[in-house]
Length: 256
Image 1 (cartoon, rainbow, N blue to C red):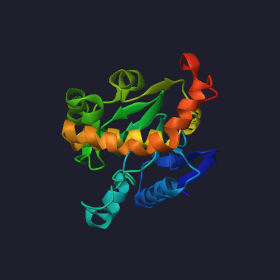
Image 2 (cartoon, rainbow, N blue to C red; image 1 turned 180 degrees about the vertical axis):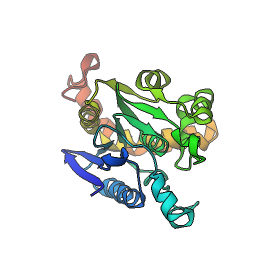
Image 3 (cartoon, one colour; image 1 turned 30 degrees about the vertical axis):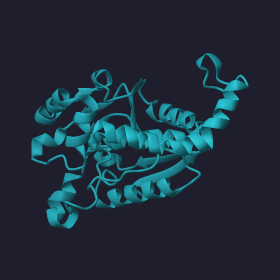
């Protein structure tokens, strides 16, 4: 199996397991990743997912040997699914990338598809496919500029240079930095914390944040207001009651 799936309570853990190629994704692995995240999105008991790679690396991109062996027509449909797997999916629930080692080429696109990235001090991000004439076709030219700004994205996209964990954190590409070997544990802990929140409200806010990118400000504000009605009705009143009873004072997040 090139993809392993497990659970930690409400957290779904998806692990790429091709350590011999630094978790590069071939067609079989891409298909398994698509299935894994579609199943996560439909599973009411799974609230947050964590995506990682085994063997000390997140993902070294697409397996170029597959491209060389099979040819382009066999593995790529321009208007179909992304060759890295789920990168053209819009899920209804959050995914965290737990990054050790390389997240490069298609691997950085896979990490950028996630909502957040927890990176260990070993993490290296980069558009390494620049060397081989392989374009970013799993969202990299879209998500990187939106995430780190056009200037920094061009630095990565045009030069292909490696961006180490500390610099990536300074750019906002990595959300959290942790010691080597601790990215997965820290991501699962973060995911479990997120799973405690009222889920309808959290995921409604998440959806609005993504939706606004291609909307004029007035339309985006209307969408936010309309979509916010349901969590107000179903979660906010009970939440306000818990606060009034003394929960969560002084910014506390425990016992909410």
